[in-house]
Image (tube, rainbow, N blue to C red; front, side, top):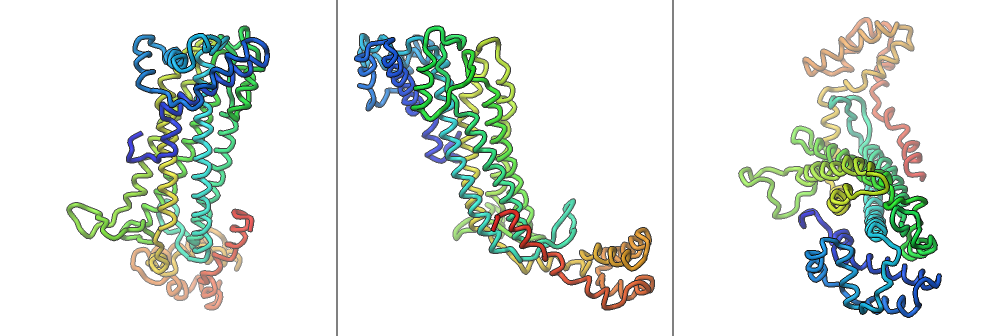
Length: 434
């Protein structure tokens, strides 16, 4: 991923130096386990640890690979240069390249998941803080982009909190599913390596042994992992889209923070554009585009092929680095989001009283008017408000058929805004458990 949309901790997970360090640890722990079993001499296993403080030379490994055309063999050759060819002769005994590659990839994905889990926790904290801050800040709810009934900005934040809380659970489940390792040898039968070696290596790396790995770890695990990233990215876009709508000039109920010296347009000095949330919309697309290739990687020939390899070398870093950046950016947007309560009230009152139409409809039916007639009476007065910008309550009070069923007091009480916010505390208790 390009540096513009990257953060260093996540990038470091996918660096060649980190990868080769993990490869080394897999090989070294495997040697220890084989020495414990008496398969290789103890002194050879101990000799491998001479390289524990070595910073492996990426350029040198690439140089060897240019000849061998095999990345794992190139690494093992370089390792022997540090350990000694005689001392290193038992390294990789009974193992196959996928044992190293797949186990390493899952270590990297679990580390990436840990960062993403922390990102989600930070975002949830920001959403919760803003939800309580605006628990009673009334705004109009919309369906189909059209004014519906009153809600609160706090409920909007709470809704996004609940969605991201579900994503946190999904991310934790995805981490658990991907945290497996395989040291099972060619075609996964353990013919040339004891299962105890796999158990030892996995324990040292914080993984659990893959129950059956053929020669590769089953890719349905990875498909589920990347699908989870795709769902989280879609939730990021969901929040970003709401903010983009709220920042529209004719709406302006909320807006991204605009810093001193920031410029919105090279041509129009007055512009304050929702650039961060537009950026998040685009980044979400990048994360989602990794999901289908991950799904297609599930199908491999027989016990293994490497059709998945080139895909994963790209989507592993790209999806996790991009989502890490997006979650951090969204947290910043939420933290600094400017909210305009008065504009929310002004927008709700653009068509005075119109959003209370359902309350009047229900009151008429409760007063004995058929639903069909009640709907007709309410709608004909509502359409006047749409067309003439009159006051809905005044139209109802002047309608003889309405007044035949409802008194002035009964009509007036249907325009109490607090009616729509009376269960906010109940919803908050459900979401936040407070």
